[in-house]
Image 1 (cartoon, rainbow, N blue to C red):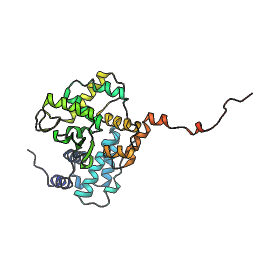
Image 2: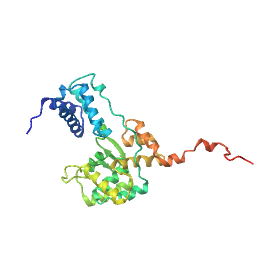
Image 3: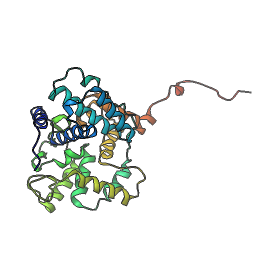
Image 4: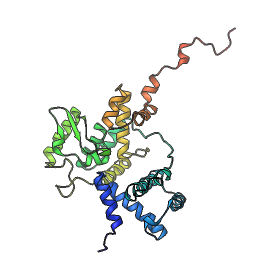
Length: 286
C-alpha cells in the first residue's frame, strides 16, 4: 500500500475542516495529482506559469468547461489554502462557459418518460426528482424519516453547499411513496442500495434515466437534471413566484433561477407584445 505524502494529508485535512463533501475532496485530490503527474514534479514545486501551461494543455484535449473549472477550483484551493499563497489563486482564471438554455420536457413528455422507467425504485426516485425539483445526490440521500406527511414537506439534507432545505410533498407523490413503501419496505434510506444501510448510488439513477429516455422514444437529451429544470419551468408557467422557486431549488442567487424565464413558453406566450397596444395598418389603405 502506497504511503500518503504529508502534502496530500495536509490538503485532505484542510478540506475536511472546511466541511467539503467527500465527492469534492476526491475531485480536488484527483485534479492536483493530475497536475503533478503532467510535470512529473511535486505540486508545491510548481508555479503560476506551470498552472497556465497545464490549463492550455487541458483545453487542447477538448475537456468540458465544467470539468476544467472543477480543476481550477482544486488548484485555487491547493495554492490558497494548503500552500497559503495569497496571489496565485486569484490569478488562476476560470473558463467562461457558454450559457445554454436548459432542456425542458413538456408535462406529457414527463409522463411518457416516467412511465418508461422499468424499475419501481428508480421510477419512484425519478418521480421525486420531478415532483420536488431534487438533484441526483439529494434524492439518493433521502431517508424515510425525511418525508413529513403531517406537515406536507420533504426535508432535503446536505444540498448544494451543505445546506438543508424543505420542499413541498405533493399529495400525489405522497400516495406514490406510500404504495412504494408497502412494496419495498425501506428501513433507513428511502431508496437504499444493495446494502440497505447505504443509499442508492446516483449512477444507478443516471443509467435508469438514459434507458427510460430511449424506451420512451424521446429525442431530447434527458438527464436527472432535466427533471429539475422541468419542475422549475412548469412551476413558473403555472404562476409560482420566482422567489419561491428559488427557495425550493436551493439557489443562492435569483439569477440562477431567472434563467427558467427564458424557457417558460406559456409565460412567454402570455406576455403581451407592445405591438398589441398599437392601432397599426401594415397594408396601405385605398
